[in-house]
Length: 167
Image (cartoon, rainbow, N blue to C red; front, top):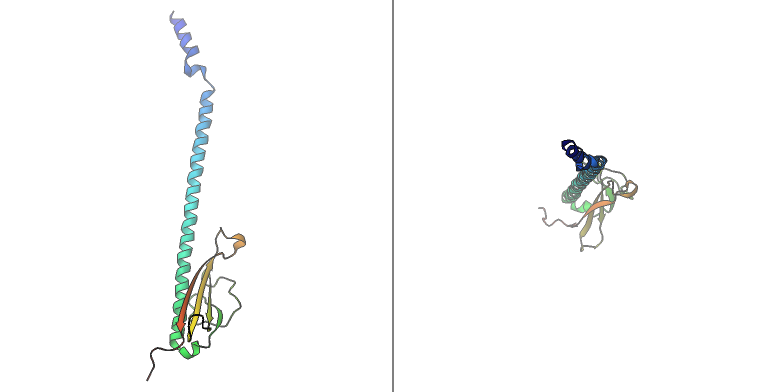
């Protein structure tokens, strides 16, 4: 009787009758692990991409503000000369003068960014006021054909008349 019971449990036990199921369970577990690892990798890649984009956007804003400050300093040094400045200028990193007029700024001039300054001596803001537009652009993997598709623009209206008259 003991032999019969032993054979019965061996033949009809769930551990012995489902020999192929452990292989299916292992494959299923591997598939679940692969899905989880892939999801984690995608999340990390997206987070890193967003971090890089935010860093570039912060630098873009900083470079645009620097450009506005440089133009303001140029204006403060020579109000009369500033009245005659008009056009598009490519302002490189650590450059404190505007240089020559350009048709456009097409290549990076501040690290991997393109900074351009447009000065208009038209009464767009008011009489005796110049409209200064500083644009800084950058590219990333989201831009088609490595175009500089992200930009920050800073527009100011600067007086061309010195409010403090000298002696």
